[in-house]
Image 1 (cartoon, helix red, strand yellow):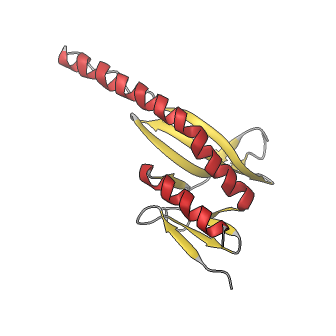
Image 2 (tube, helix red, strand yellow):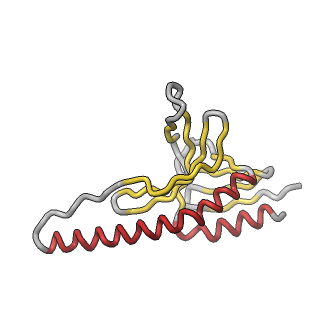
Image 3 (cartoon, one colour):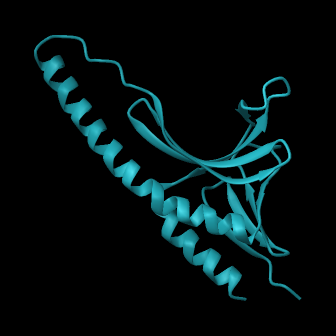
Length: 155
C-alpha cells in the first residue's frame, strides 16, 4: 500500500502525494487542487532553479527603487509609485484548455512566487485567464519542498 504524504506550505495550503500525483491545495477555501504528475513536478522543480536569477535581479531593482524613494521623501518630494509586473512565467503542464504555470509577480515592491491554473478563452485560444486559487510559495519552503518530492518519488 502506497504511503500518503503531506507537505505544509502555510497554515492553510499544502501538498499531498497520493497515487503517484501531487495535489496542491490552495489557501483559499473551496478551490479544487492543482494536480501534477511526475513529469510536471520535475518541470516545477526545474522552474525554481530558472526563476532564482529573475528573483535576485528583481530584488536588486526593488532595493534601488526603495533607496530612490527614500531620497525623494527626504528632499520633500512624493515617492514614485511601485511598478507592478510579471517577472517570470513558465508553463509546467497543459491539458485540453488548461495550463499550469509557475510565475513570479512583482506587486507593491514585493515578489510573489505562484503555481497557478489558467483556462483558455473560448473566443481567443491564444488568451488564458487565471483561475481562482493557486499556490503562493513562501521563500523558505522551496528547499524543504524539493526534499519532500525527492522522498515521495523514491518510495
